[in-house]
Image (cartoon, rainbow over all chains, first blue to last red; front, side):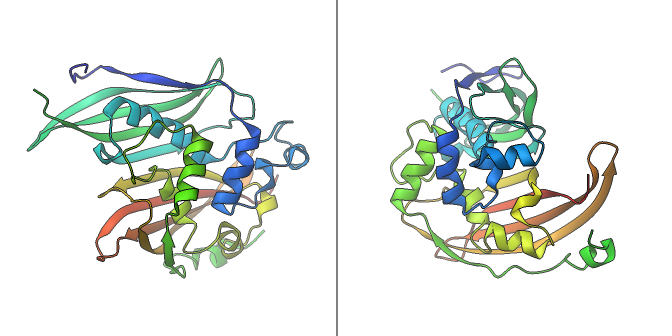
Amino acid sequence: MTPLRVGTNLPSRTVPSVSGEKMKTMAALLADPNRIHFDVDAVRDAGMGDRVINQGPTNLAYVMNMLISWCGEVSQIRSINARFLGTVYAGDSVIAGGVVKEITPTDSGSEALCDIWLDVDGGARVISGSARVLWPARD
Amino acid sequence: VIAYTELEQLVGRELPGGTFTIEPYKQWLTCDVVGSPELTEDVAHPTFIASVSAMGVTIDEFFTICHASASDGAVFGECANEYREELRVGSTYQVCGRITDVRRKEGQRAGVFDIVQVEFEISDGAGQVAALCRNSLVFKRSA
């Protein structure tokens, strides 16, 4: 396990190709009737392109996955703040990443304040934010 | 376009609220959709908070409250989630929420759009707050 230090880059996590089919499942799970997530004609009608558009919660979940992979347990994630800056389309490759900005000692270890993000590979940043993650003392 | 004075009246509006249970099949599907790493048994993926937020009122009903529809292309603006305890698969949670802020803005490209902020509390069976969620949704009102 890498020691926790300010400036440490969190191991990035890549989704090689965002699936339009999985957007349909997420639309059903969220009871989200917005057709831009499953009907490419609705995307075209809205002038938003010609591929279906991923749900914001799914994009944020890619960042959560990066944090879980890094810290090991969901329970260590204490908060996440995120701004949704752009659109992820079916077929895009996206990369979640982060960096430790601040470390605060706690009774049981440390709390890391991290900058977090999601980038379209070769494109724009689509999520920017911060997360607080507990980092237990390790022998 | 709805008058801003009418929209402002949404601030403070309590949403119906309700309960939800994280069913194992929904956990499985959620983890599959988002490509989750392996989680400790019975721990829900933290993105469940997003679907939780929709349970006090459906997304479609929320759009209607905000004088919009699904075809208007509403998008997430920001979210802030605070986790006080893990959400557990198979557990039932109480959700209560309210609209806490409304702002109208205008951009050269986007035209008029409204940002509606909604906050939710998710409480466990013992009545303890397990998570807090603050979302802002952006509603485009004109080209």
